[in-house]
Amino acid sequence: MAVRITCINKDNGNQQNPHEAINHYGWVNESTGESGRNDRASMVNWIEKEKGSAYVGTGANKAQCQVRQNDRGTKYLQTISD
Image 1 (cartoon, rainbow, N blue to C red):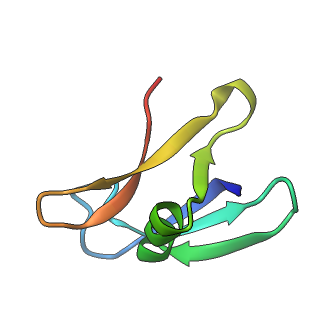
Image 2 (cartoon, rainbow, N blue to C red):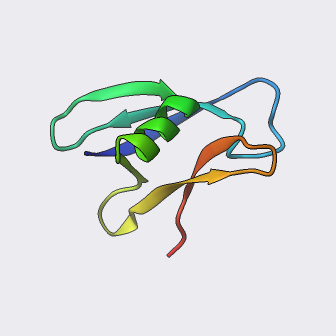
């Protein structure tokens, strides 16, 4: 299943890193119309363990997201450049 990330929520402290500061993702499954909001750890787990897929944008402007990990072990989503 693939979901389109529709919005993000950032925490109030870790603003130096644009990816790690995200604490929740809003999403929609365009195939089913289902939508939701999940924290960063849940989205990472869904992609890694349940083989989910996430992207941003629409049409020709889609960019897939991948799981990345910083040197402190924090995992987050980052778009793949084309």
